[in-house]
Length: 110
Image (cartoon, rainbow, N blue to C red):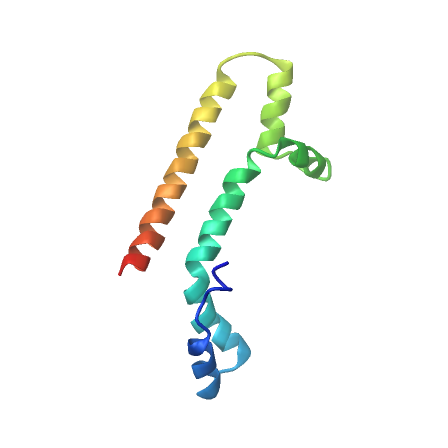
C-alpha cells in the first residue's frame, strides 16, 4: 500500500537528472516506502507465531521452528514452561512494535 500511495515525482526527477534504475530505487523509492516495509515485516513476524499448522509443513524440511517446538512440547508435557515462553514472546513482540512505532512514527511526524 505504501508503494501505491507514494508520490512518483521524486523518482521521475531522479531519472531526469540521470540516475539509473537501481540508484533511483535505493536512494529515492526505498526511503519513501521504508515505513510500510518495516510495518509489513513486523506484522508478518507477529502473525508467523500464530500459524503453527503452516510451520508444521515448513519444519519437516529442516530444523523445526519455534511454534512447532512449542506445539510438540505441549503435546508431550504439561507444565509452566510454555506459559513462561508465551509471556516472553508477547513482551518481545510488544518491544518490537514500540521500537518500530518510535522509529517510524517520529519520522512521519516531522
